Length: 368
Image (tube, rainbow, N blue to C red; front, side):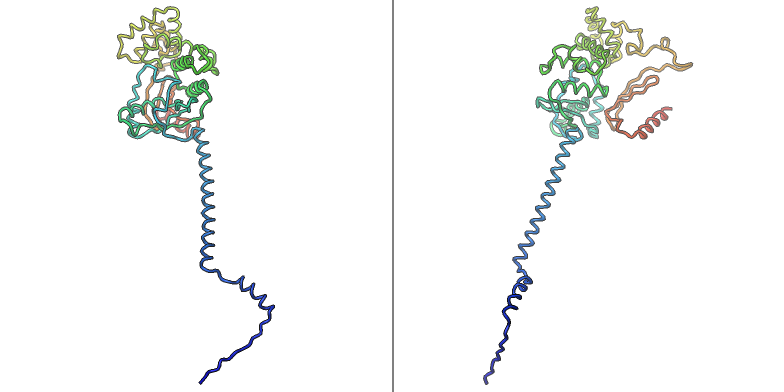
């Protein structure tokens, strides 16, 4: 038996088809390939935006780093052989540093707590030291003792440079004179080196003192010239030139000018004192300067019988200088009547005033 198929004729208007087709297209579902392409494009856009944000952040950090480095706020490991001390030439100054061994031990045990400060040399030959000569010497000793490796570099703050060698000399002097880190003997040596350096326009010590210490009063420039003369005559005979006080150096320079034969007498006297202390050396110089009885004017504390009275029944105090080791590095202390001076490579002006006042009060109260 044959089953008949039923056929239905449905008439659909042409205008309805025209309207339905766009609607069907707009509501149509995307296939798997189209979805994958769309998702991949979105991921690429997100990666591109992220990469651009990272580049912007890196550019900002790099700019900030350059600014902080130029201002000397970034500690960088600088190779030892790139740090020079030509300007102040402290390494050429005779004398022994009794506390250097303690500093070497401290750095080896706990590291360097206070980095040195350097300035790029205008001639491109490395860096010139501004602050931290003893710390630099300690690293050199450690490098020589332990060999290459851990002590090949020294932590340093790199300050902004100077356009020429003459400017660098002035920068060295200004930085150290402001902090009172230079003795008169060191200032005199700096002037001698400035005059001898072919990169400067000055050929004599008088001109060098005028150029380097332009902002100093005339009296101080005169003291430096006297010390330069004295160091030229007897500097190589002294073990402790930095300990020579101002008045003694000026008086001795005057004597040597008037009586040049005194130099031979000083040489002979010091030759038999190989194990002399700074005090022993100063006694010899005072003898030839004729300042044995001038007391404090020659850097010597007056004997009790000659010291001016500062109050009834008040005992006599002598000047005492000593060094101690702290977390901030080596500290030089000078104690005398009515005065206590503490010298350490730290900016006390950056400390909150109330905290500084409290610390000083605690120190004074603790002394009784």
